[in-house]
Length: 154
Length: 379
Image (cartoon, rainbow over all chains, first blue to last red; front, side):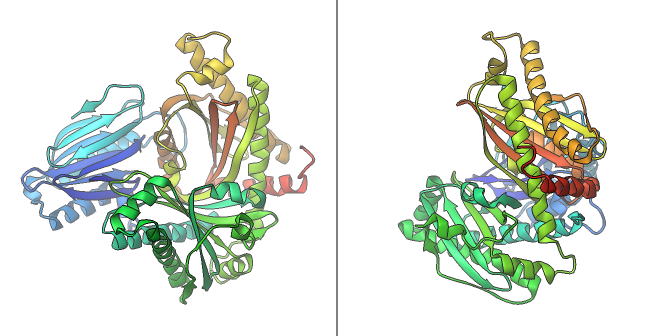
């Protein structure tokens, strides 16, 4: 079963399912999994830090990760077994609206994973290209697609 | 003319919650994870409403009445129809049931907002296009549509789910809201799209010598996280500009290519051109198109608006809009998008998405008012 994850969204799946999200520009995808329990979650977050109070936690890296990890625990994942992979945060456009978000999203993901004691195993971030991601919780493989580029697996 | 984008944001959020609730209802019915992949509040030229709602072999309407009255128009593509028929083991009889459950989920959120009930009628298969849109909320030739697109995990295809409220009921619903919107004020925004589409069409045709035809143009009000869904995940080539002056905006001019390199081939008389030359040709086409577009806004204010050096893009369309959405998302929950599709010959489609800064809403309102006052003079 393929489960699609939208922008400002997260989904949790167990063995046998694949989580996919497309159109990562400056957004980041954070894939978290418990290899022993076979439970994984994929977050597609748009902005680094949630305001207080937060209306839509999945829109932000920090609150989205916290919410998703809680949901994973509810599906049988052990907080001490979690590992993560991180993709996205590109800077494809030279526009002056707001501050450049891509690198800030990557930095926020690193901080949030540290705070949750989740080990970051691999990352493919920055650059100027958009990415689409497919995450298999059973293997922990994250497959990255770009327009006109070779497929990469981390 | 004051258009309160904060109120529009609140309104778009209700539509978004309605789309999410509809997807949850479908998930309960089928037992399969359902996703609401797009929600938007669209302002559409009444004459173009039928085109906006699209064609599909499987279409149903579901009327509703109460705190808000109108109808939902549900269009199922082949893959979605086949998927639900298989899951529910009821063949095509599944579609009226799905239409019913999606509409029920959507209107529940609106009924909660109004603190009263909305009753829905049995689904009817669409047999008469005119009947489908005749009572739409049309003010000054502008129709209001709340659209969601819903998909099921594990299957291709989508259900396009458009709610078209009746005009009097919609105005009453708005008036009951603390942050009331002016229907007339919003409808003036539509003039921006028709003028902008005309500019895109004429400049593309002049630059390429190829016939250009506006397929569709309208305004979307969307939560920022829904902006990327306005395009599909196909590869687009084009340019992204910023305008600076009385109205700051980001303008994406993106070409969906039937074949790789088709944009440059249209501009240049040589096959397989040098990549730098091809990129420059695409940027020039985008620049002329964006300038023509922005000039109409500037002329309405009797001023000038500068357009920046472009960022060239050849990428997934959603990733491009994702970056624009994240930039605006730092300051706004929802945003207006002037959304235009122009066909250029047989092999190219140009998508123009313009994002006026929410902070310049008053000035955009002035432009809309001026363009409405001079409607027809620039045609």
